[in-house]
Amino acid sequence: MTRAGEGRLNRIVSRDQLALVADDVGPMTAPVVILMHGGGQTRHSWSGAAQALAQRGYRVVNVDLRGHGDSEWSKTGAYSLDDRVADVEAIVAQLEQPFALVGASLGGATSIHAVASAITPAAVVLVDIVPHPEPEGINRIVGFMRAHPNGFATLGEAVDAVAAYNPARPRPRDPKGLMRNLRQRDDGRFYWHWDPRVVSHRPEDFHETVQRSAVSLAEAGVPVLLVRGLKSDVVSDAGVAAFRELVPHLEVADVGGAGHMVAGDRNDAFNDAAIAFLERHMPLA
Image (cartoon, rainbow, N blue to C red; front, side):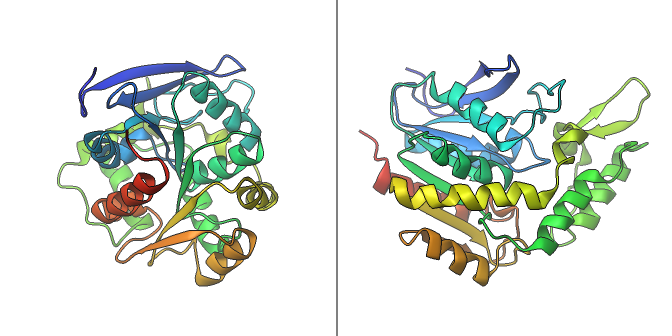
């Protein structure tokens, strides 16, 4: 049995033959936590959470979503929520034990749509995403992802772009860590580690799909935890209230000092809330 913290690289092929890359950490036979990052991120955004969950005794599948990180880009621009749910189906098909879906932003929307598509997790953890998010916050994210289509001449320019987007987070002492989110092409310029076509859709259409799918969370009776950053411009009190009307059994964990990137801003608080929830609804043997 692999001990917690010893990672394996897992390659998953979805129904359209697109290959996904995931870190597979923790005991192979333990209940599984599937981590899905937000748009414009990579699986490395979950590094601390993955290690904490594995050390607790869970098996963790920490995946780069299609069009992101080391996973393949779709040649046909297949980045709908249906396409992403097919990726979840491919991951789940490899499992025999109970599993939970943990998704931030885009990964959370995928989790909601997965339940509506008859995938049956033991629990769902949504990180700073609700069916009715604040348009201003969503537009800020999409605007960041659509900016700089010609890349950056230097790594410092990319660091400046991130700092402008999230000025509350301290600038990294070593900017080389940002290379996990960048690709340097033959022209020498640095480009984000995601396919620009990921954000070619209208955000309104995307969230209408999530709103329709969210009803299934109540119908399925799956335990749901929303972890939100109290400094988030994406999830408001009104958005939480509207979500609770759809899903009366919704649990909420508020994380002070965190914005939309909850796990990155306050990884300790996120880990505590997520692990406590999972231990109640998907306990270890």
